[in-house]
Amino acid sequence: MIRRHYLLISLSLFLALVMALMPLPLSTDIFRPDWVLLVLMYWSLALPHRVNIGWAWVTGLIIDLASGSPLGVNSLCYSICIYITVSNFQKIRNFSIWQQAVLVGLFLALYHLLQFWLNHFLLDIYFNPEYLWPALTGMFCWPWVFLLLRKYRRQFRIR
Image (tube, rainbow, N blue to C red):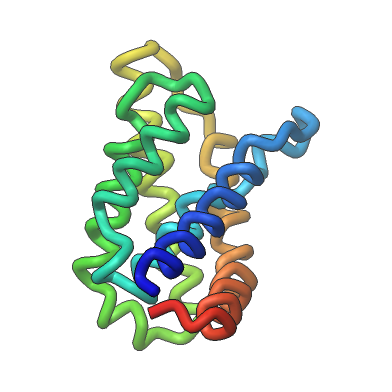
């Protein structure tokens, strides 16, 4: 039974990974939400005893390998965001879905700023304000991601 739960959580993360790596036109690619981090944040809020920093670290390594970014950048950024989420999950659960969306937008902005900071030191890139568009689109996608994954969790009785 527990293996089935992990398999279903892994399936949702795999679908988010596919959505994150799917090619988009360059004009819309800057607006792509961070699907993997949104799904990780949902599972860490819903099941903090199952999906925690270890899942975030491994998922970040997979993203690093799949996207060709420096190894460990996404792992560290995901781990920091999920650590903050898991350590405050009881408070965040009590917020309304719109308040959670604002908080998720802040976490996504933190993720992008950490990722920029690490890439700036490793690859010598410079900040562009368009770099934070995914935080805004992710904030607007959070209610639908939350409701869809909650229905998925309840339908398959993932505990």
